[in-house]
Image (cartoon, rainbow, N blue to C red; front, top):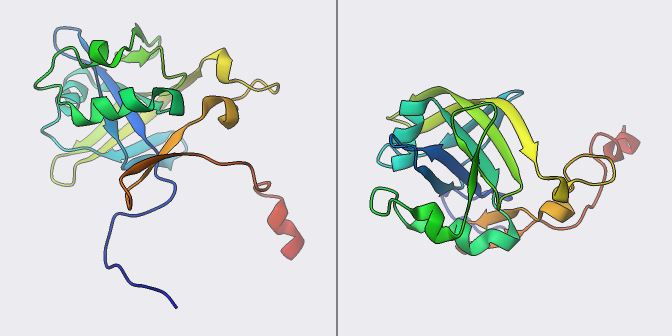
Length: 186
C-alpha cells in the first residue's frame, strides 16, 4: 500500500549544485542550489530567487559556473548555502575555497570542486525564479578522470540533496548499463 504525502518538492537524486559568480568588485561568490539540472543539450536550468547576491551577480555579468558538490567538500558546500553573500563578503574564503577564472565565461571556477559546468546567461524570470544558462564548457580536474579520460563518478564522489530528511547523500554504485540493459526486454 502507498502512503500519500501531497505536493512536495521531492525527487531522487537531487543534485547539489554550487553556483559561482563574480561580484561587481570582482570578488568571487558562491551559493548552494538543489533545484536544477540539464534542460536541453546545451542548457542548464535552475530555480534561484532574486534576493540572492549570486542572482544579482549573474544578471550583471551574464555568466556563472555550476560545480558539482562533493563528499570531500560537503561542509563547505553546505556553508555557502546557509550563509548569505549579502551579509558575508568573503564567503568563499571562509569556506576555505580558492578560485581561478574560467577561460570561457566571466565567472570563477572553484579549485576544490573538481567538476564544473561553465554557463552564459540565457534568461532569468524573477516571477518563477527560473534561471537558464547556455552550457559553454564543462571542465574537470584530472584527479576525477577515469582510464577512459572521462569523469569517473566514483572519483568525483558527487553528493545529492535528500529533501525529505534534510541530508546530503553520496551517489551509489553502478547497477546497470544505460541504453543497453533494457534492450533484452524488447
